[in-house]
Length: 229
Image (cartoon, rainbow, N blue to C red; front, top):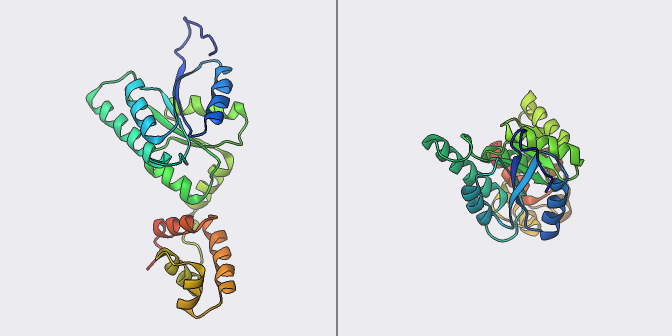
């Protein structure tokens, strides 16, 4: 850990949550070089992160989204934020606001960003960012200010500017509806009397329009934007 000036401001206390031990070790080394930042705990899963956040009361929880088996980063964020709100109401804890959650992930789909923000995350940062950007985002999050990676901010702004619902064709909506039912490509093709190749082509266009790269992501965005009848 980097020594702090006892006469200066208190360091920002961080709890790390990532299911990869090597990633956590790298973050520990990186954050240990940053002045004014102190890592007070680390968790390898969502359940552990929720428990440690309640016990340690850090200023910021640095949260990955994909945590392997068990509770994912979205649900962990939701619970940590809810616990912090409960502490605020009772006036307890080290800080009045409780811990803020800063997502640190490799995923930047609209569905992931929306789910994280709706769960209460204060910021959303991509692991590809430079260390200086991470340090700045941590300090911003500790003050309750929003911190977003530029690509994430661009996506959020585009949606806020009234991009509205994606312009899906009638056939794309049909396929999306079958996708939401859990059907595979072959089953969708049979249900709609088209070829599997045609299904794959439409799925690629649907993914592009919704800003996702998985079937689950397409269904999640479709539900959020009420594209399913």
